[in-house]
Image 1 (cartoon, rainbow, N blue to C red):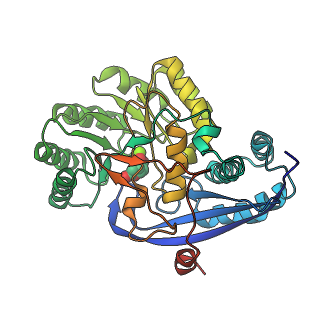
Image 2 (image 1 turned 90 degrees about the vertical axis):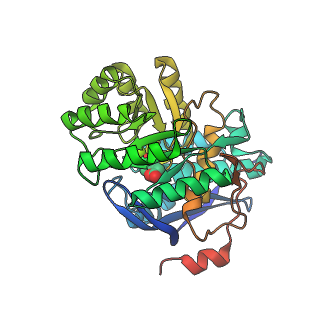
Length: 373
Ligand code: MUC
Ligand code: MG
């Protein structure tokens, strides 16, 4: 194949409405902001990527506006004229030239893989070594901010079969109120439905010890990121102390974080996210570390729209042991989307598009409608 170059890269911010507010310990999300990356190659092929975060700067250290600026000002000129075929070389150049900015790097790698897949007529999962599944289990996060509404939502979703497991977000209220909220939902859905809890770093280690004991008693199946992400040793202590599995999310950001956590037993499960890791190939590296350390895996989300969700699904589908399934429900939080065909969810799983590349097409009318001006 003759050399094919990256001609130009465009980024667009879209603000999409959500079905209801989504309450997390550090933010209430009332709409979702997505940065779409369009990477145009000299053979006429366009690759799509997505950089998305949660609640402005309250989750990660990259904001949507900052990500657009980084792409337009630094990445687009740097990559113009570079080979679109050697994705590893482009990513190595990015890693060398631009510090941090993992969310943006993930969007660029996604766009390069999408373009390459379209060019070769294969899916992104095929480029990454091949899928072991064409569907992935997807849980739903109950986070309306109200216990009764959450119970109602859970019953509806269990009845229509769309989801079979739930995650609850706590940490905004005091520990006792949060534990009562969780216990009420767990009691309402019953012992056979998996319920996990994400504290999003809100507890100190001592509060976590009390809180996790109560959550374990209430029958909760997994506790996600109970304490601040920098307290790796604390995560290791909690993992050793409790029977209920402890999952590292914010702590398990990069490949190097995964290695450091694995070395000290900081978490018995890792939440993998392409944004935190800086791309899809880094997910496979984190998974290899976890495999070597006997740590289980969970397919996480940054509440991305369809592009980021499908990119995540492609790489997660290459992992033979995704013990805790995924939370790739981001597109379901949106009332409207910017792709031509929305994803199919049902019977507790999502179907992964099988067309070349990501298998996702932008709907330019929708992009235009929701584009920030
Ligand atoms: C997080 O921390 O896991 C993922 C699902 C959800 O509801 O929020 C995100 C963020
Ligand atoms: Mg989390």
